[in-house]
Image (tube, rainbow, N blue to C red; front, side, top):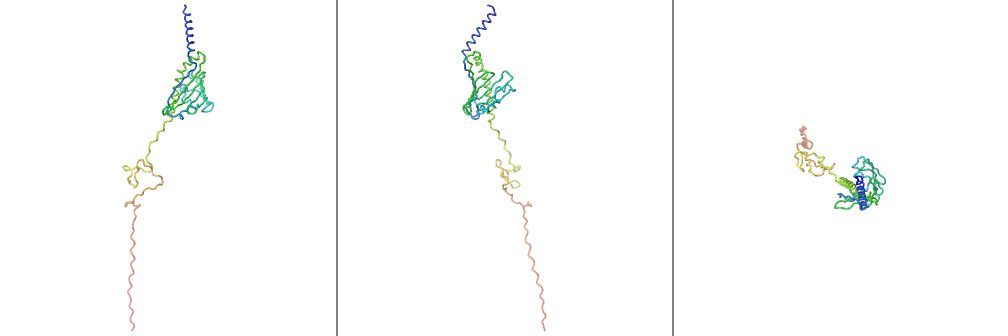
Length: 261
């Protein structure tokens, strides 16, 4: 037998085998990835229900920084839709639209990835002190052998994209929920600290040294007055003795009248 005939027969046999395997493959393909986020369901759900924030953790936005994104419908909830276009074949074009939204629990979406129509969903359930978020994708291949083989490859391709996106979502939510660091304590204002002063003891000006941690005195509050000292001219009182009594007038000498003869 000629080699060319052997090649044709071999290719024909391979096609028959692939066709037979395709009919054994499932018609419905389901892909799902999950992550546990340290936040309650009420804090996680708004990130999933708002399509305008999807680009912040989208797996395709990280792959193509020049990704073009367009929004339509409401900002969140049923009817919210996002569409993206990329010049990179690995990203291509696609869209996601919320068709059903159950607060803090479940979201159903209609999706299209490069012409491949399917359904997707977000599911949020409690998990310990946090929440478990699952992002799933469903695809119906029908009776087409080509679509069945395509569905077999989706778990590897779409599953990796979903895993990376959920990791970014986890990091974003937990970072934004971290408490802000408090500013360091500042020194008490209004009372200058004197070297060697003992907290609570009187200082040179007569006032008490500030006690660490004690609240500063309010403006206008009465301050203790220092006791007057002998060396302070502003506070020393000079006592003036009373003037001596005026001297009495001396008695005038009496004149004797001459006796009449």
